[in-house]
Amino acid sequence: MFEDFEQRMVEIYGERGREWLTRLPETLSLCARRWSLTVMPHFEDLSYNYVAPVLQEDGTPAVLKVGVPNPELTSEIESLKIFDGDGIARLLDSDDDLGAMLIERLTPGDTLLSVEDDEEATSIAVGVMRNLWKPAPEVHPFPTAERWFLGLERLRKTFDGGTGPFDRALVERAESMYSELLISMGERALIHGDLHHENILSNEGRSGDQNGAREPWLAIDPKGLVAEREYEVGVWLYNPLPQLLEYPDPKAVTARRVAQFTEELGFDRQRVVASWGLSQAVLSAWWSYEGEGHGWEPAMAVAETYAGL
Image 1 (cartoon, helix red, strand yellow):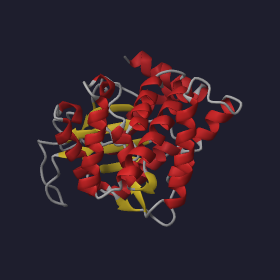
Image 2 (cartoon, helix red, strand yellow):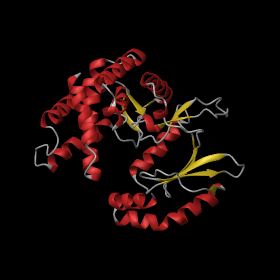
Image 3 (cartoon, helix red, strand yellow):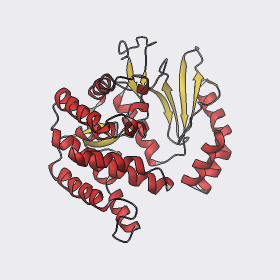
Image 4 (tube, one colour):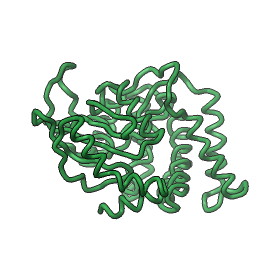
């Protein structure tokens, strides 16, 4: 529902969000004129940006994504430029001031949730990761793993040094592991930062372009994060939520995924599951609490699963 989207924008951005919503029709018109687009009704499930299918002047389908200009949106635009369509939907054009992106449309665009075999889905994700990752630029505007994990410091400050509704032992373990990970972090890369099942779409109707044929599965919506490559796996391990917790044996699924990543990417098992996996699950729970005040319980439940591994 568009009303839910409007409410979310106001909750996140306050009066700035209200003003952005008021200007949205004008912004869409500006984008349509600039890029000679026919803008169609927006996609049903809007989250933090207005996203709609469009037709370019020559009839080629694309996607128009518009958001409140902010550092995260800028990071997405800049990362898409560097990824340059490798393992991800291609950025066709952008306008930082408008907070607008014109992006290649993937068809049929089914999410990776449509692949019921979890081992197959994980293998597809591995392929996307390999195609996507780029060496980290020496100078860049992107967030880093260090900056993201400052969230755990905010958690402590919020609860006067305590952990509030979050399990103290899990928070302390995440903090300890995070400190060790930073000290021993390997080569930095530009990674997606939020690569889960709903951010990988099918592209079976693909056609070639100047860079050749497109892959059958491509990522969308990158955060653009600079961290070691192992960080990327942590996000995958605690998704999809809450569906992962509804599997007959979530612990066995997680263990099998870890074995896949260890074998197919050559990652260290301990670093993947007991470190980045658990730490990111706790951090994700905090972000849910910090941003919306609810919805944090599933991520903490997955963190408990990691602790058992």
